[in-house]
Image (cartoon, rainbow, N blue to C red; front, side, top):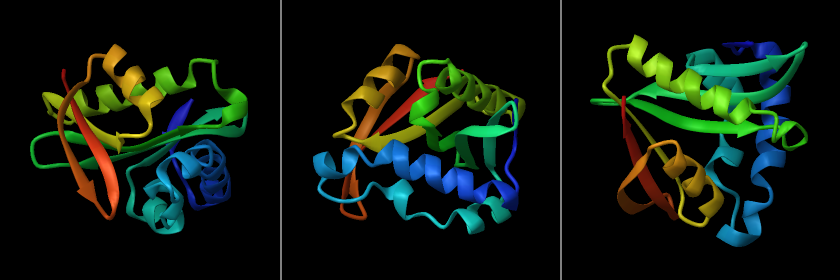
Length: 146
């Protein structure tokens, strides 16, 4: 079940993000952006949803309105639950949220060193739109028409 996150979910969200992104620290040379977020604040502001599997938070997705699209700002799945289709469910949720909100496309960004993620997004129909450096991180932006 995917539901809006509450303050009670923040500890689980922080743990999932830390464990999911930790393997990229060495590759990027620093902590990825999601590891630096204040999730208490993000949950309080809305747009954060969790994948609750039998009472355990095993995934998180953060969505935000962008100028002409819905921004998929962050998606992380507990590494112990990877391979169960939770990432796909969260992606489908994001795309449905975009459609339900009247957007004709969804956008996301990821670090260019996260090649596995870029491959996953490409297989799901996302196309690269541009590269840039933001906050010292080399990012690849991608978009999908819905």
